[in-house]
Length: 185
Image (tube, rainbow, N blue to C red; front, side, top):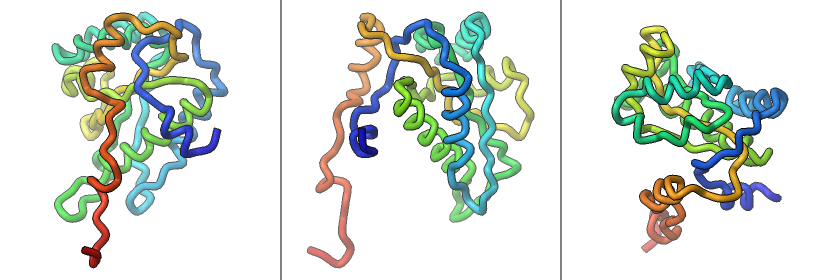
């Protein structure tokens, strides 16, 4: 599959097989994140990896009220908390680039995972304070996203179908709606 096909076929996965991700595949996913570009090469990303099913279940219960809506993470064989060390960040144009840097790193991980047949779901529905407390993160760290990773189950659960339908994730705006060529009328 070429790169454009890879990007077009990737989708959020919320139903996982229980099969663990082999260490070499997980390391490749993490390496893809490590190789991401960052502002002034500050590399603010920090990843907390949970592979134990009991730890993942406890994490889902300790991610705040909002996080409880994401029960599907309990069945993922791997959960990664994507964090940013804000002390390594750069602020330009009144914007904290450590958030952008981590987002780029996470997207590279998501695509590397999909390339190996591993699905994921970029999650923002959690209480950052609760997650930081549970994971005992340093004060300067921000939780940017949580990502369950695993091999997609063939059949989606009703819950998984509902979560996929709600955001309308397959709908993409056409280029004409999002691109403006400067100087052309």
